[in-house]
Image (tube, rainbow, N blue to C red; front, side, top):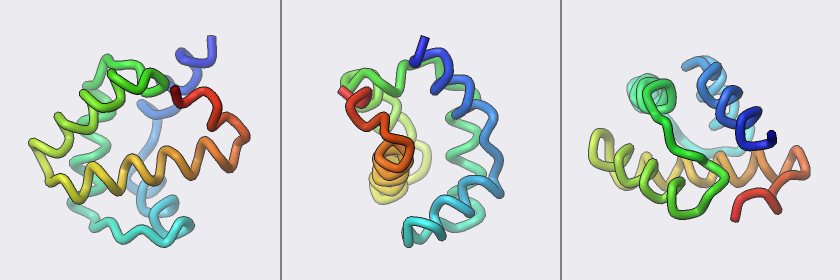
Length: 91
C-alpha cells in the first residue's frame, strides 16, 4: 500500500515541486534538471522504496542527466522520507 502511494505521489510531482524541494533542502537543481527528473519519474515503473529498484532508477536517471543529478534526487528522496517519518520504508 505504501509503495503505491509513494509511487503515485512521485508521478504527480511537477517541475515546480522539484525546485521547491531542492530549495527547501538546499540542494541546487536547475530547471532543466528538474524537467529531466520529472520526465524520468513519470515513465518509471520501479519501486522507489526498494533499494535495488531505487538504485536502478537512479542509474537510469544518471545516464540521461548526470551522476550528480541522480545523487541530488536520492538526497531529496531521503529528506522527504525523513520529513514525513517514513524513512524506514526506504530499504
